[in-house]
Image (cartoon, rainbow, N blue to C red):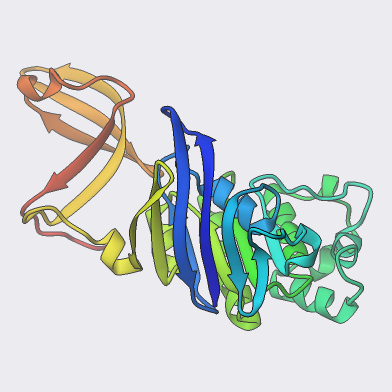
Length: 282
């Protein structure tokens, strides 16, 4: 069990704010941490890793990582951290990058096997694709068999096919090593696939905390579906207006009245919803 009760003053996306979090995490949970940019998600991960200071307490089982008297240094916290960038040692081979963390070759080879990197173990990072580099980064984070695995949007720069593949590998590692995992993500499909629990941060505070379905499948009123996207274009065709909206990797067209367009601007974050529809899956 991990107990987190911390406070830290931050400069948020709008103004100064206080990161104020009080959470209890159960061993073996896969937690998705989500919310708007600037809400404190990455800062929370860095505090857990010991890379940033904060007031309060972090306790892992019977071991105190942070309290009023002391702060356990990062190297003594049994964590793995995977960043958005790969942070690999360019002068070391794939295998050497892993063994730099722990001289446990059997574990290194097992991790490379799980992530299908065995044949690349003697290659150097500059010869690898982005997806391969991120898999090496993930393997390296698992080399100290962490109690807590922290993932800061590690798949955000990858194409959809590679994202899905790495999602499967992250889930395999999470289950095989029975680690507690916290992953920052803005992708609802990714969160639904991986997480057993979703925590939403807004301006430094936890605004929602529950199982994945409870958080992601909430609806307002009687509407049957609701998606959030970015308004890319508004165009008039004959007597109607058409909005082009980006939702994840998809573009959709929505027919609007002239009155509806009057309150919209290009770049707006918009919600598309309907109250009655008959879906077709093919």
